[in-house]
Image (cartoon, rainbow, N blue to C red; front, side, top):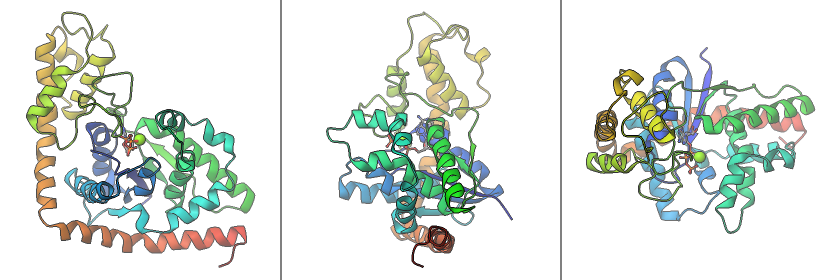
Length: 324
Ligand code: ATP
Ligand code: MG
């Protein structure tokens, strides 16, 4: 039997090159070796306010981008989180074994809470829901970007605590991180992670950006004050552009770029990104030509994994003594 993989993306904005290089690209590469579930985590997206009609459209757009990035719906299950009630149900049960202190020290909670006028309880509970996502399918491997490693560690702590209180119920998930491009930073500020929810048009390269937009964004990206690229002393802006370029085109190395003028270096980066995104954009256009197709992929994914989710809910309820 193949080990099970679970991972997700929030339909909270335009998917960017960080999501691709940190998550989707890796998913496409590993899917044949595992039984994979790739989830559009809409319940996570609403931990900060989303305009309802935009969210509904983003869910389908995200599904189409999964397919465009190389996720094969015949091989992997592509599902929407809110279409399976078990996610929210299990999250409640797990929240009852999670100490408040574990949640309030999460860096993503602190960073996202800072940007909100009123902080919803959902934002604090986010990692418990993420734990439920993983444990619901007894997933062994969770390929995420480096920004989610703290949440994954917490998921293991929650699973461990539940198992020791109520008996062995959950498989302990391990991490699985890509080696290059695990953490892509913002083009406008290379000290901040590139995020869908960040504002500013020069912050992220969206997977659906046109080539001329990509060139413009890269041309404006923050660099340092030296006249040319020096790989030994490069600042965070250049290092980020280099890791984006390398993740898109593996033949690019520190040697390739040593001594390059910034204009030439940025052209090289833009060329690598555009070449990498071109076939993805083409496949996106094909996948969205027929809206019924995306709907059928989501329904099929749901029917395939629903029995596993229901099994885990029954098992968890029995372990806790709840009514079954
Ligand atoms: P949001 O701002 O709404 O949180 P996000 O850009 O952080 O959006 P998520 O949906 O939270 O995206 O994350 C989806 C996946 O993409 C996760 O596996 C996450 O680790 C990965 N990821 C997100 N941002 C980056 C990044 N800058 N570099 C690499 N991987 C990333
Ligand atoms: Mg995020």
